[in-house]
Image 1 (cartoon, rainbow, N blue to C red):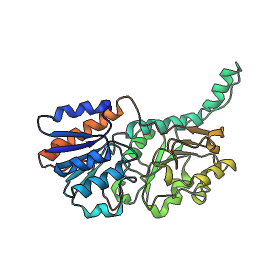
Image 2: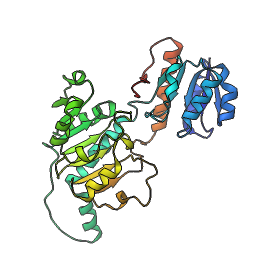
Image 3: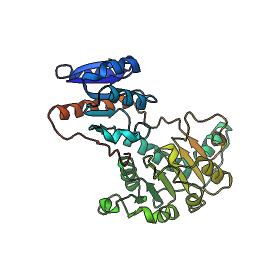
Image 4: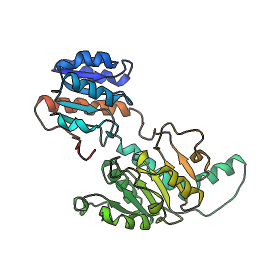
Length: 321
């Protein structure tokens, strides 16, 4: 059974595929020409080249429309899915949940960063300035989660343990009615409630046609002026120019951002220069061993595929996640 792996040969995590050698034939290709030449015998396609994966998928399926399973080494599949993909009889999976824990930790870091005014502490330390001041508790504050998937759930667990009130929105709110980590779940048509109640608003939604640009000046205006916006989901879910305008006009207290509309973030972007913005270069999920964990998940799914078991993390191509 052939696994076609589209990846650079120097990726350290590829060594984990060695455990499959007695049951699968691994074909590693680094460029699109080699991928096309070797796709005709593949049952499985593993995509490991961020940025060119969509083109690789198109070419592989053109060469072999009977590929049965495609796995994306990362979580986001918005850059991978194209309209004709649903015509193929394949299963698409991703790394959903693999990166939830480090992203959730960043969300809590962001809450504490603003509650304890860490920039002020660092500036005073640098200036040898002894300046006692009042700070805030995050305990008792409300954290709203827009997009209650695996990342949102990981945020909720931590926030709940720290004494925060947790509210979330999801398309089917009935799925979370008995969630022990939530104080309230609201449907999408009542999302204004989420914005109005949140002291900290965490965006953890996937990028789809419904969510693209969803967070804009209208719902940012619903936030308290003391609220902090945190994006650990997908950059284009936020209308970035509206967020910049909100920060310029002091509509909210601050923002912590791990993802952006275009990456790397343009050096001329005003976001770099706001004193009340914490920027992470889309690396919050890159904890030690993160790609090893993702590859191990793929290996686990390979065993399920071989045994004709249902694969984990099947993507709904119509929904985009």
